[in-house]
Length: 453
Ligand SMILES: *Cc1c(COP(=O)(O)O)cnc(C)c1O
Image (cartoon, rainbow, N blue to C red; front, side, top):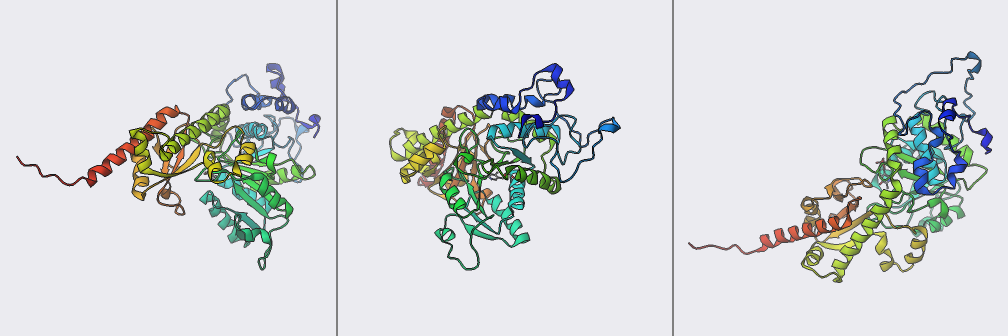
């Protein structure tokens, strides 16, 4: 769409700064865009954006300029573009802080974005929007399966296994995955952090005119760009890395512009549906989100690097490459590690596409399986730097005995979300925790000694 269609800049703005247009910021690098993509929405002299809590906004005082909106027409801004500060009406439609967040996210994901009250609210909105009869989905985050069950209750849709070859053979009775259906891939996947070949699933979906939706929560930019590999919609639980500080719920949907004829219509449809689903972000959360995105690249790259270094160290303990008393304790507690950085060992094929699709590093969540369920249950209690808590993506490292929030996983599984701390401190903490577990175990096994006085 032509630049001239953009809403005219607020008159206050022009005297304070020269806001860069959407086009002008697009050529900047990611680290710069997360700091400046929202400059066109600067209406005041504040360097740090203000928090606007109002739910309702005054109309113009000039009766001649009162233009009742037409429900069939899009609002006067570009999809994912800046919204002038006098264009807000009611915060279930648009509000200053959430619009600013969407402007940055749209620049970050290079596709128009909408935000939601949570990741699951975004997934719900996506299903309502695409309205599929068949949904192919893998294991992944259990909450998305919960949302899908709600959608199934309303629509009677068919849910099939993404990884079952029967899904792709079109041999089943009574259903066939086809036009308008959804292929939903989570990559990297919860809780293991292993990645999937997005291009492969794009091909499977598109051969059948189905829509490929990617839950890329575990690999925010700059780690993975699912659009580059064929995604039609990208979803994020912004609660995780976009928020990054374990203090806000947020969901994000981004619409691919690949289909030039339909993307705008689909964006506005999502926009209007959100008005009626009512699942908008709160202004406080959106304000926190903007503050968080400023450091996204710093955090994500550091966390990614930390996780890979930790996994490499633990792997070396298990294979005997690392030899120290601490390494022996790790090997007595930890049986198996799962993470994208180890994937090429089991699947030589992965080495190629994985490096290509995730050139800047892997996600910062990995899984470890302990030798016994008792180890997995007790390991978090021995750690000092990892909080025992669910969720992921925050600056602070977390570990979770995953049975506490997902009944479908093995009792030996701990999920680790690596934060921004120095990885060597995290490594030492993991080692001392394994040593403490081993010490406890040896103490229990010691024969009782009777002392004679
Ligand atoms: C957390 C998470 C969700 C759900 O997001 P909420 O913001 O908690 O609603 C969806 N998908 C994945 C992969 C997640 O990690």
